[in-house]
Length: 337
Image (cartoon, rainbow, N blue to C red):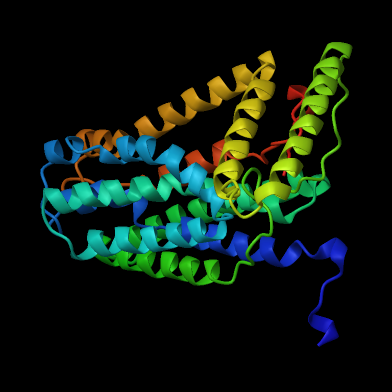
């Protein structure tokens, strides 16, 4: 049995391998490059105008992002990753067996949940890995998703062009892949800490200015007086004094910590500009992703010509892939768990 045990310095290998397997199979979706052709074809028989009139994915993603972020930290990542796997399966079951515009709108909403829960995939690694490995494992987790998307696009193009596989069976293949991803998510170990709700209290105290020191000393003296008064009251009637609800104080502490971190992070001009650029580029990418297949089908209808959506998306992914550097020193950012 000792051969299966890992040393403390390599204890992060198992969860990262499982997480990378989840990321690979969750992004191994050969049906995505041909999703509009599938919806407007004989399987679903939707008009192109109707496929552009229900972009609920973008709006549901926006609405769900903040509550999912809070839930992710509160439940310590793994349950949200499992939820993402379930949402993937529900999405493709509806795509395969659902009919009508209303069902497709429900598909868009559920896929918005998939996109919102993606935050747990990247946040999980920082709860199981020491800071010196952040950049390396971030590169692993991001690279494996790009590799999977590229491989899925190439596979889809080969199956459509050479084997004449139907778009329905491409979606069946995607359903099988995301089901495997859900299976791997069940084997992720539950983290013992998170960034806010379950953060470790052991953190070096920052140096304080003389003004801050004076304020803290005054607060400390007031705190001692309050403790003395509380002790006197407890001697007179200990049972009559109900204790403060700890969960409420814990939630308040986490909210205060969020605002402090937000103010500290975005006091950096470089980090603010980088975050603004990232938000705008992500929004633009999602907008293009939502409508580019409709444009392709308009310029070269799939009924009249061969289509190469898979090849184009594979080249696009290869041309844009790079190893992410989340802990870039240029921004002066330090990851905290």
